[in-house]
Amino acid sequence: MDYVGLDGAVYGVTDLDRAAQFFADWGLRKVRAPKGAVAFETVNGSQITLRRHDDPTLPPAIEPGSTVRQVFWGLGSKKQLAAVEQALAKDGPVHKDKDGTLHTRDPMGLAVGIRIARRRPLKALATPINAPGKITRVDTRSTIYERAIPQTLGHIVFTAPDVDAMERFYTKRLGFWVSDRYKGRGVFMRCAREGNHHNLFFIKSADGKGHLNHVAFMVRDIHEVFGGGLHITRQGWQTEIGPGRHPVSSAYFWYVKSPAGGACEYYADEDHVTPKWKVRALETKPENFAEWALPDGIHRSRGDIKERGASSS
Image (cartoon, rainbow, N blue to C red; front, side, top):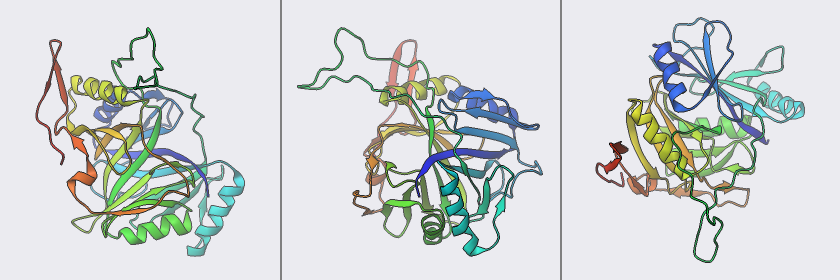
């Protein structure tokens, strides 16, 4: 099954105004939303929807407080949607909306929606980079981003009580592909045969319960990771970790604590994989999470940049 990608995420939050301000500062565009909700979209139209945590229209939460309540995955055709419906029916009746959207729950209890993708194709973007023997930028200064404008929803990460059960559900019922693993602890999955290294990652929880870890937004390049992180810091939001670089996917990252639950991540330059990709079983250790990382961001004041500590964990 080839999905177009992560199509949307719905949060239930304890402070709707604060969560809405965060995503506006994050660089998303506010769009029309149903009554009682606030909605934002990335450049390609993948959406974040916010509702109050006690909104009766929300699915049950996997954890108390602010968190993601439902995740939507987008398919490219009605034929593929019918195939997923048939696979899900092996576990019992499938709830379907009038527009064809399928609704189910994964083994952790998270609400999952499968629908025809609503995201729009992105325009090809190439960042000119000068390298020895290959000059692509001449008489032109490299871009400096004052803030990030996320291009798309890229992936979502949860801790889960039973990672094996999650892998079976998403691969056997929804048709996802495994890209890499942390030995005995986690699994990176992508929703299409060919595409980004991962759209979904589960890691075993320490308390035997499910929790949102983070939602990730792809930006254009490493410079926009930096520009976005600097801007969100100036707005008063707190870095969780970053900037840094993930060896497992090659991506540059910057994580920021979110009032909507968990964290949000800017990232760029992720591996693009196909069925020829060799799945690895990596040890769960700090250097496999981050090749390098700053623990609390880069801070700019009066034109000066101070790097407060560097760590590989």
